[in-house]
Amino acid sequence: MTTEPISDSRPYSPGLKGVVAGETSLAFIDGDKGRLLYRGYPIGDLVEQGTYAQVAELLWTGEWSDQAHLACAALDRSVIEVLRQLPANANAMDALRTGVSAWGAISAVKYPPTVDQARALTAAAPSILAAFARLRDGHEPIEPDPSLDLAAGFLYQLSGERPDAASAKGLEAYFIVGAEHGFNASTFTARVITSTQSDMASAVGGAIGALKGPAHGGAPTEVVNQLHEMGSVDQAERWIRNTLDRKERLMGFGHRVYRAYDPRAAALRKVAEGLSSVSEWLKMAVAVEEIALRVLHEYKPDYPIMTNVEYYAAAVLQGVGLPPNLFPATFALARHAGWTAHCLEQAKADILIRPDVRYVGPAERSLPGVAAAR
Ligand code: ACO
Image (tube, rainbow, N blue to C red):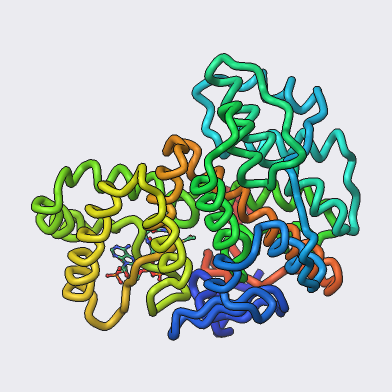
């Protein structure tokens, strides 16, 4: 037996920071300039002139279609029965993940992923989340209205009322900015699962699990809590300094890739300004943002920490009347277009993702008692 220490001097980047782990033609993110393009089109233009259905088709097929329409799908009875078994206080992300898993088992989707599978899963997800939200409140799920686009259809299935134009447009914009964002943790998870030639529902189920963590997709709920805890703009600076002194993070700020202002936050702020129900909250959020950016710069002068998409997502999601406990799962609905587009892209690449790891444990050794007995 050799007792030499095991050493491995290959380069290692904790958290895979800066590591290029694949190729994509879906999104281009310029973190330094705060630019985001889906297949070459700027996110601001897509929000102003496009629909989520058009964006999803663009991501799946590479084509821009004026006719694109995607409505929420009716759920198989068995998916609803699975959701009915969940406790009313279940986390909405857990419910969505469970519903997607049940959908996958019932539809028996197989590898390789297809555009039709992507359309079907993206259309089923809002119906799953709406059904869970209604069941936990003691109401029966509502059949989807095929004339409504996905975002408006989701709001309809939650309340039974057709949303007003501003709310439908607001959530549509949120769905567009949330649709795709490169190799973030959840998308990477979906690609790893697809790379094993597993099916799209498994890949998206895993992605939902990754998105559940507060460092990735849980922030808008926390943004609301944060502002609530501050109470007023006057208290904001003290609250922010206390938080940073405790080495805690400000939610809605910072991003692994963006060193400039997140263009999605800018697009959503514009959308939020059109939602009258949230105007008071937005006024406070804008004032708090200014203070937070100033203080963050003071604390971390060499590491730009800017506003991220979640900050103004909180405004839009509240403005369209969603309860904060549905915010993370609503983000997951929007990301279905991107996740499934990445499944398609990964299947085309057809390469198992399996990185190496550096071993830092003990050198080879004998089990206790074995050496003495020898
Ligand atoms: N508040 C306070 N300090 C921060 C913040 C923040 N929001 N973000 C980063 N920092 C600090 C860290 O404390 C760290 O300081 P240290 O070096 O003294 O320990 C330094 O900046 C670097 O932190 P990392 O986690 O290494 O940087 P990274 O850029 O990878 O962080 C992340 C990205 C995880 C999103 C982080 O900014 C964060 O936790 N933000 C708050 C949560 C949030 O808003 N998440 C939503 C992100 S957007 C999305 O997922 C769609």
